[in-house]
Image 1 (cartoon, helix red, strand yellow):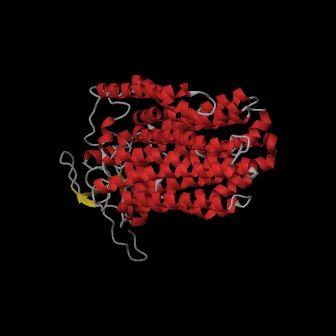
Image 2 (cartoon, one colour):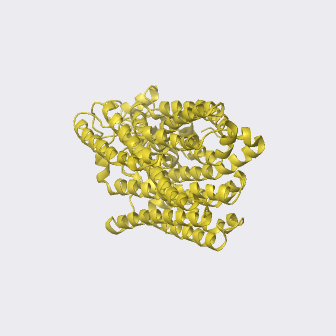
Image 3 (cartoon, rainbow, N blue to C red):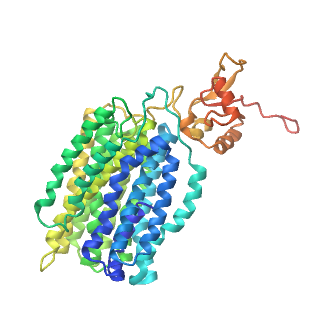
Length: 560
């Protein structure tokens, strides 16, 4: 929903202008206002999810996003629509960090990489569907009212997702073994400083074309001063309290370099969609539907490669990301050459192959990089750490669109606009940013460990936990080990599986179903503190699920 609302609104801007007579400044705020408030709350919302429970925060964000989508669709004037989009950005910023937090909480090892791969595929599909769906809706409902359907499309998604999220998502995890018990608060001073610094940093970029003059760039050094004050406060606050952002995470190579790589890459690839849509619709007279179809090769390639990349990232590591970045650079350079050779109405066809190659490379960058970046983050910090990573992505996107857009508009804003030349220069600028991300990946490969980091670091003791399915399915998951119960109660041998721990959050229905297929009877749970069987299992010393041995399958016609 959150990413669909970026790509789908891009193609709806001409319809919004026709429908409510929005000004150019208003249209800019429809796009940039959403990005601004989205980036503003990411880290603090992730921390709230860590402390108060991700399911509750996820449900709040999802409900708020659905309601604000309805408000945006019902807008009667420009101010109403901009206000709804600002609130929608806040809702998206509340919702998104919980997703990476849940993946950290529920999966370990190779399964975590596959989960992030599926997340990347979802991102790719939503990016692909957005422009196409927006074009279809505007064509079906007309240019005057079609833009309303672009926002209303979120209502059925939210109505279906809310009850499913309430039923299927796990509750708050327990602290990991060894996690220091410090007084926990939401660090309001840190939230305020980080919010002010983020807004001051983003505003000059998102309003680059609306605020004339160089004074807007004064906000950049101001933002750096505020962010430096935030770092100083966090160091002081961490002495007695849990900080908003654990700055020690940046000492891990995987996290620090991964955040920097993500910032640079998003600065490049996000801007490609921005200038490509403008080039096709304004420069070549494409309809919204035709523009959406032209963007699909990149998005579909990204979706397919992300699922594959998630499966192999734990074996290959950062070289996989570097290979993806090489494909992106080659693909974008191929698109530049294609537009140079053929810049007429057939430009959507000649750029399809190079954009498909770039999309395949992108799928090997975003999700694998996210898996590697968060590989050493404790589960208790997953939300805020993911929020920092996504904030870097939003800052990169805003800065990239401003930089690439400035190059693009310098060529198309004159009396004789050069759409083809502007698009080629914009693509070359985006390619340069992707090349900088490649340099970061190569530095990590050259100076880092020779073997790829295990994406399941920080997992529970007694075997790498991979969630209920990996633990009980055999083969890929850890083996069930025979253990003796505690000595305070009656000693009784049982099978314990330390892979399925409280923070695994595996629904009991799933555990039972898999156990039945394996011929294992589950007799106790330690992931439900209110369950009597769980209490007995904990008293017996079971670290996870206490189970009986699988008995031999009885002969036909006899009772088990």
